[in-house]
Image 1 (cartoon, one colour):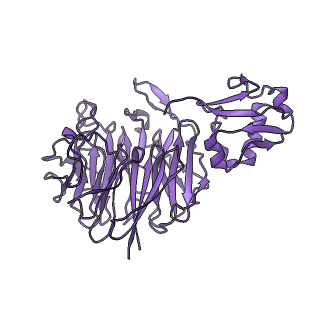
Image 2: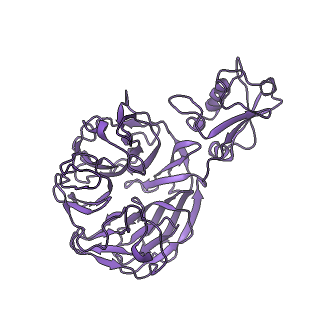
Image 3: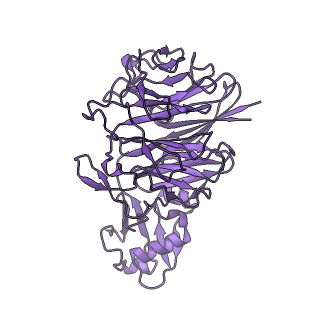
Length: 372
Length: 98
């Protein structure tokens, strides 16, 4: 029988939640690395027991942990993330040049084919890669050097590279997203990159409607069967591209607010998309205190609220960009974590929800593994 | 023999129980002690000093003999009591909220 493992990163440690395919009873393991911020954990698609975790702390800096047994035991691997050559500058909040400074790893994306190869998204924004299981990390500096890097500017949450999507049909094609620079694509495994932000409009942040970079992209998602179709939750606006990011159009449609962070796609229905609308850029909680996931079965524009089992009142949590994931069981499971420490799961594609756990530290990331 | 007391999280990370005891060749300074500590426990590299600059991480402090040595030169001699092992060097997490 299939099993499900949910990897949860929180502000004060990592948790591993495990269940059988019924997804009714859950074993909770953790906190692993108690007291440390765990921005992200993710397992290798080809070796699910190989899990990588980004562990950081304001006191002690960045560590990367690796497990070879599904999160039971861990070993620290290399934590030296050095920008390639002369790092140069990007724009600071006041518009002046500011040197690139490594702060932390926001996101880890294991290769689709090799458990020893992992991509790491950093703040200040850069993409690193290991090909030896984390023993050493090297920057793919073509991203910062593609021309616009000196114009990138941090958003309020920092200048983090938070999304890494690898095209299953062509591992040399990778999409990444940076707050607040935008989305970028490589066709050659990370050597050269192109901004892909045409159609994004950020009129309050960017007066130039044709601005090539500077867009505060919060998250992008794809379905593995259609890697040319991308969905995006931007600072404001939910967007879609049907040409691998060459152009974008808004699909916010009838959402009650199109601000938010998380977005994901149903495991078996490439046109079924999920977002968690958040009231506004300064009010990071659901409208009217009602926690709702919104689902579109038409690839956007038309959305339905999903609230069965979710708080009906007095709920003022946020759902962060890396905190939603899906399993690939026949009845697709949807999972998300909140800054209030709850991890909610739906075993019926969002029709109904129940908490797996409800009192963790603030949840930063949720990743789901469907295990044989 | 030099004695070092690390904060809880670094002891856990390096799987250290109690104090660290190590020997240093030559002058006993912050730099030589931390070099020896990192050689003994490579997992601590980058957690006390920045990888690139080797500067103390901003929210850590170095105390010994009831003195705050954090802002002394990394090449300044540590107190004789630390060099002799009579007193430990404390690596302390600063109060930094959270």
